[in-house]
Length: 454
Length: 90
Image 1: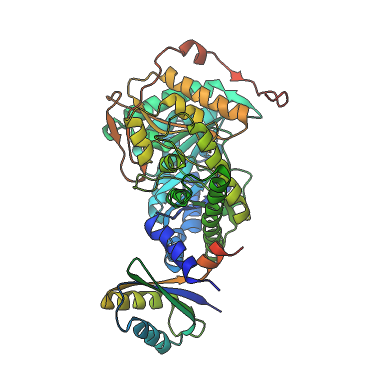
Image 2 (image 1 turned 90 degrees about the vertical axis):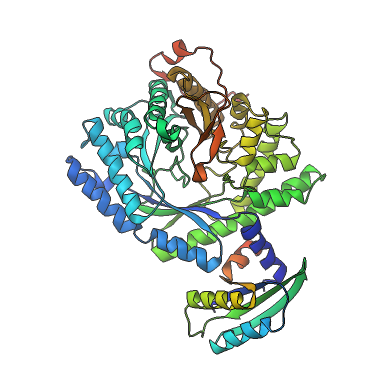
């Protein structure tokens, strides 16, 4: 039977170390909502989401109360809208109507984000893909809860540089449109390489076409718990350090598995995956950067950071994999800047640069995430940064992503504030040497060779 | 069997266990195990209770005991046992 020290340990994680289940995300296929008439299609989308997700928030809250573990967010991901709206949407306004429909559904069922205003264009854009992408700046301005993502590359297909070039402009325009909120629209927009179909985390969540009709994913978090466990092995060798992280990741993920199974049972839809990511928040003690410091770095960004992050990311996966029957999504450590107080401090201290963050993304689960850059950064420069990050993902067979916020009217060292989970960030300098002739070339970067690995 | 873990944390005082046990017996909850410890000057008590025959819903028991805790100046949580079982047992 469970003993008192185990009970105290679990409750300490929840009460003192910010352990929580970060999200229950319901994936809903909209493929059966396709219709050539826009009004009919929007009505079908609304009807389906409301039928499937009406009890999602209530059930999440009930599970949270029964087990005494916070279930922070309840969210929805849908089939990439570019696949749904192709025959109904002719103009930018039509695509924005789709985004507004999704936004209204999210508000009606009470979820805080809905992901899937997305296009998958690794090997080129259809007219529908391009139409959706060009509507993103407006769609993210007139909606509150819609998240958008565009997958522009993959290891198997290469990188669509036409889409990369377009996304530089889309990010710039989205920031400009939401200038009154420090470019907040860009916090809801991700560019991916090798985007996972079953990611429960925003802003990059969408419901892949290979998924069942309706499915429940869970994202767990707990950087504070890992940090507290690592504190116990100060001065210890790598073996003890790695074992400690693994065991902690196992415990955290087991709770995610429990919540996922319980949500599946109560809502009557299949359990998809548990995403065992260390997802920080701006709350004190809920920081991945603090774990890196505890491992032995003065600040994230110091020499050794990439190795420490590689170690952390790998042990989290090793511990978590056995704890859940289905692991998926992004699974690993997130290193967003604005959402992690330790990362914010490192940028302020001058320890962390965009280039070091790029190196770190080679060994962790996502990419350049929630990074504020000067508002006058050229679209071609944004495209160049995206191309670099996509190339890392393509060559290393991993998911990489870019979520940059060019803060309108602001420059290096100034702060941008998004509030809530999205946090705040100091604006980081960007290498201003020109790359427009490179990103201006038409076409695609071919898929890489899959042997001769060096 | 529907099992719950009841934890009581707070400054030690006379009658804490008595209050909780009385409430549980009035509501037909069988106590399977009790243990307690003092850590950092704080009283930590844990009970494993079987709620199968309880006349009340889990959420009612949780709210009632939370209120009882507030009356006597301690924090009482009621959680389903599975969260601990899952985390600490393979």
